[in-house]
Length: 315
Length: 272
Image (cartoon, rainbow over all chains, first blue to last red):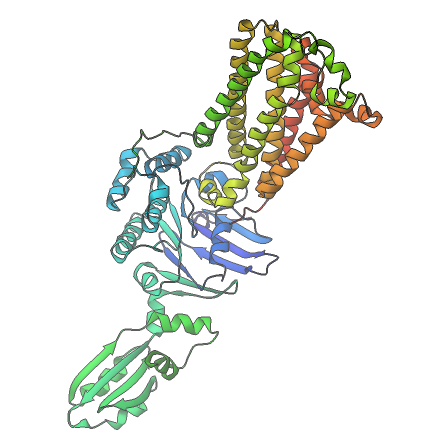
């Protein structure tokens, strides 16, 4: 076993991990690596294996085969020490109902020999969390805040967040995103699962897409954007459609509506802009690439033709 | 609306487990204290009734064996029959089994085990701390029973020595702790609360029957040495005082069951 200095510091490294359940669900041959200071988002529909993967990473369930190393160390053998460096938010959050948020948070802080109350309080105040009411009296959103605070307190080197913004209102979601970015700014690593694509677009560096327990794609968010389809509406003065448009390799011309030419272009817009520059343009709309289309094209097993994507959007 | 109270400072799994059950422990302790006092209060009526001294001889043997009835007019005979042969051990075992079965399997059932074990604490440690809370709770409840007896015995002249009371209470506590530990272990091994409690109760009933009826049923006499109930209460600690070798049986079994529990809990997948 030769491990380079780099591989020792890799927060998450899963090799050929398989976990089967009698019921059928599980994960198969999962290979995954999340680097230092990275935000990795795990995307997939419910039941695809996101939570199974995450519970493997916390040593709550044990894989049938494959190896899991966190920070370069074997998870089973160094389970307790490794968990000291992880902050975890479960997807199905269950808390000790009788305790107040303050009691639960200080309890967990003690179990981690972790932060003192003032440090925790900074987080609870960020979330405007009422800490002295029994958890059983809290709303779903407030419970989620308790879960987030206990995951983030003590500044763990690795944050594993299963659906972190579920049940939160949009303003709080934005707060969570900025806390995640702040954590990464301090050199920490975040592994989160989500089925909210806008969230992934805002916080993640890389995305893994999982379907039926198999990782079907791992991409950089920036690359996904590059591959993404742009939708363009353009109206030319005098309603003349330049013939060069039809020659653009990456463009698909869609049926025109009210003298507006509609195009779908994969990749860079430069060739199109060259054409447009040579003609009098009255109005131009470029819609942002839609991660959702890319996501669903992976889920359906093949990338959709841009025109089909447009039809499904228009429907 | 919200009830303000002083926030509890829960440093460990032991403290939280105990904290969550503090009201229940208090209630059971009050109950067992009351049981000791009320039973003792009945004693003067029984003692002053000379017919009762020989009445028990007319009972069927099986009944006498099951309820430990000998001479109800002596303090020891009375308390053995009314408190220590069945009622007190039964109550403490019920408390210990209900609680023990919930300690791990209940956390799994309610889904809190994930967030607990994401903390840097080993499963064995969680199990031991929870067991310690169970032991502390059962011991406190046993102490309440002892306190009730300590108050009542001199008041009604039961003439039971301190050693006898202490030995009987310790025996009851160790016996209850054993069955509570069995419930904890089955819950930790399977995650199933009902199964955990059920199997512990079945074993407790079997141990009781074997210990109580061994003098009447031949094969039971053969298996009696295997019954922890026999070693705890069948040897009549109230009259005979402490017998360390006998007490070693329920205690030793508890240790063995815990070792098995740690081993199995460490190896298995936790339910979502």
